[in-house]
Structure formats: C-alpha cells, structure tokens
Image (cartoon, rainbow, N blue to C red):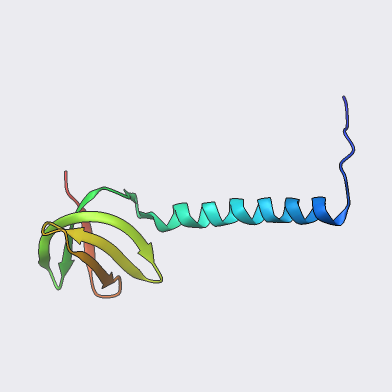
Length: 90
C-alpha cells in the first residue's frame, strides 16, 4: 500500500476547499431538479383544488418551495407547492 503526501500550503488547502464546495453545490442543484420521482423534462399535469391548471406542461425544477414549470403555451410558471398537486403524464 502506498501513501502519497499531500501539500498543506494555504493555496492547496484553499483549492481543496473550493473543490469540495463545488461538489456540494452540484449535489444541491441535482436535488432541485427532482420532485418525488419527477425529473427535469418530465411531462406533468398541475392541479389546484382538484382541477388542472393550464393542462399539461414540463417540469423544470423546485426552488424555495415553488414548482418551476413550462405550460403547453411555452409560458414559464412558478407555482407554490403549498397549494397544488402534481402528476406525471405517461
């Protein structure tokens, strides 16, 4: 078994920290692109009070408790997750 020594200078430590932070940010971004099995690009139907809102659309991401999606008319929608239900379309 071989062990390599790693540099402990300030520059190298700073670079290692920066790389770890970048990896964490990428993991966080991936989490925002999913919602209970939905993935970015999935076709969805959005419901409020049991009725569909603007029919079907495409799931984009979840951000700060809001669903970001595009409807059939190519309009970007931001809808609170507190008041809606979302279903994947076939």
